[in-house]
Image (tube, rainbow, N blue to C red; front, side, top):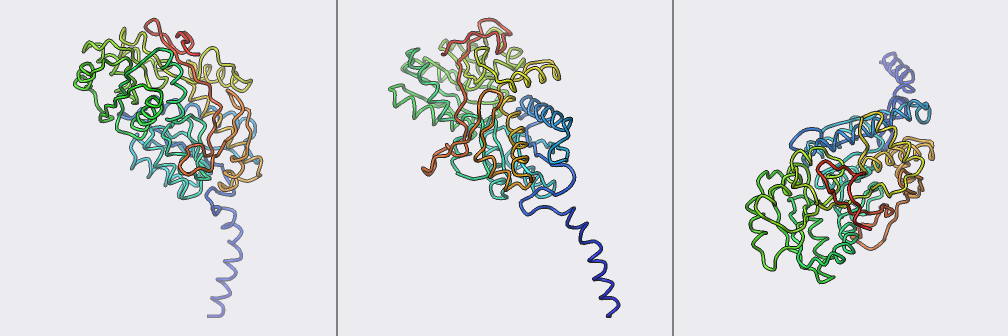
Length: 397
């Protein structure tokens, strides 16, 4: 027994350094090998897989650039890419696996609002930083987690930014067609609160996110009293393309506004809407009037060369997030997720469209928590079929 015990101790001493070198850090991540960044995003229908593909391409471009420069801390970056299918349960499972099995040090690329909210809760619980580049529900940052960061705007902020245009146009009755998700209903709630404070009536119609025929709801909207001045679409993927077309088919003549900027970058928008897509307003955080930083010009050129089309604005924000994670790792000299999160909280980063600095308000439930507020909004209006973001008319400001 004594010889067996001595043999066991000797083996332990022999392999202990290897176990330490290969073992995971307490907060996730590993001490050797590639530094892994998780990218959970929709990559299959019926989710918004077109946006998911752009998310993946953006992260790959950023990581390739860093790796060609020698990586970070002498280690290569690696993207752990998984399809969350635009489904909350799948999204939670994907992020859990990334953290517990793949040992990612940060997460970027979530998309659908309800899915992103659930994924953010998992990351916060497991203390791995997650950065949201175009997921809008207020609740994501209202949870006040030190591990949840957002570069994109949020629902109630966008509603507030739209009000000067709405008041200038003299709209008195707005209908929000909202999908039944955190994004859709959250946007409707934010718009209702902001607009009604300015004396503008808001009516909300909520529909299942996978709907393909919205004609019954649109006929109901057409019959409302007082008449509708503006139809505002708070949806993603197929309904967001179909509603303008179906609204015109049922004879709805009011102005139409897309809730976000897909008419400016998605060829599928024009394939679906055709002439019905002309004149549809949309808010965006990019236009030809936006001054890009040197990093922004570099990214625009590199992305266009790599993929054959210009990047949408959310790709700029996602590229910034990857680069911010890299800078945080350099700053703390570690790939420990807890230390990365601490560095992100106080970082000032010259991004593609301006200097990014996360702000936080102590008021419970305030969505300004690790939230960037430096975006500039534009309202666009295409005047011809096929116009993309650089050709459409800038109607605000």
